[in-house]
Image (cartoon, rainbow, N blue to C red; front, side):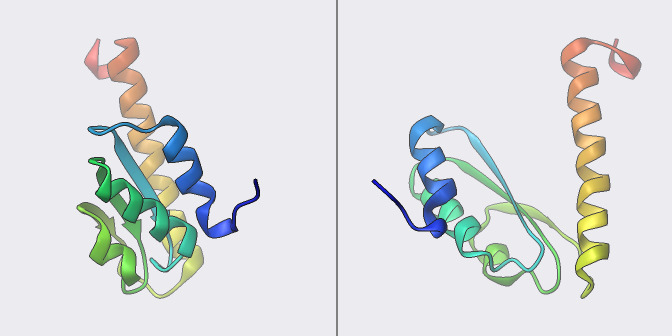
Length: 104
């Protein structure tokens, strides 16, 4: 069965997510329909939702339970800040789970 592109992330959540899981949703504008549908679904199914937005935050800033907002009106800069932030997050998670670096 085919689904609209707006449901692409919802379909993945339906297959793999459970209450108590966390969803991190990225949308530079905060108005990507497929991201908004996923956050809406996650909120209704007991997931923790964390949005990463730019510009004015759009609808995602309203739907998310928590998040990081980059208050800039330049998509390239917003995305650069998002990438830098989550590079640090991934590095930190790796250090904690592998007991390397400052967490060893």
